[in-house]
Length: 374
Image (cartoon, rainbow, N blue to C red; front, side):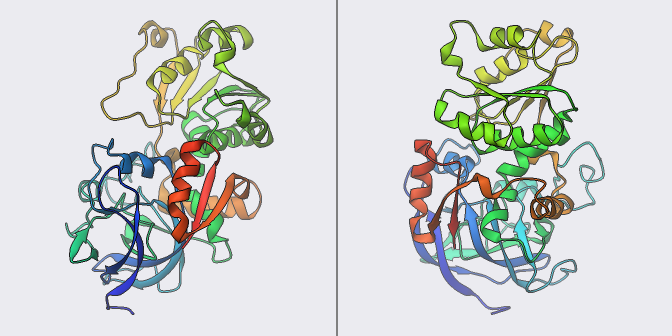
């Protein structure tokens, strides 16, 4: 089917606030420096639900959502040299062109090469490869994995071990990599550290895993849902607390229970009040707090400047700081060698026609990660 339009199934979001609709769409062949991928499996992330809800200021419709996928290269456009038909790949919502000033700076992973067009739901040339019922359908986060076939820029693809199970490693396209990297890259957790992780969903569990790999001696999980505590301990949490069990602010609880506060804290919810609490739970002089959760548009976080003057550091992370094209294959290798967990994050597996159930499970808090087999 190279150089031909492919007709296939996709879950189309026609408008904000409405359920996804399984439709037959047309996927055009890849243009120069683009790759068409047959998606084998995709996960459903809170970011997909956030955009679908209509709260995302960058949200454009109609669109094919999805950004945690894995698949096989079906065809490549002109000028593609690092990928070929048959390669096993993970599409990337943060590309790595290797040429822009962001890629050339070791301090960041935020490649900006195609940021403007990607934010508009378009390919780098300013057009879309998707149509349905005569209408143009937009791309999402440069990936659009809720489709049997998708087209992505060649700088937005990681070539991985062909033996890797795609219904598991698709999760390395977002949540697990984000949380794990927040601990080992952004915070750079040290052996013997005391850590606090606010929010024990999939990303929070990945942070706990990263803290454990880094050698933290004490990892304290925080969530208002006690049902999540047992699993958090399986991932490496040494103890878990519910802020609703205390009459005083949770940051004061940490200052007492951790001899002045924690060395590292992580906010994995996207709640600006929790972001403040996580910072203020850090130890004076050296505590580092990392914002991992994405707050709703327009929200602002605050703290007393004296918190920073007295030696605390407030940081943020996107995709765990990983330079994507070069790092995701290494993460897959770490999973294959059992250094990091992936299988344990998957609580549900659904067929493509059941994709709406994945959103229901997520909103109910009954799932950590749901994988949809395309």
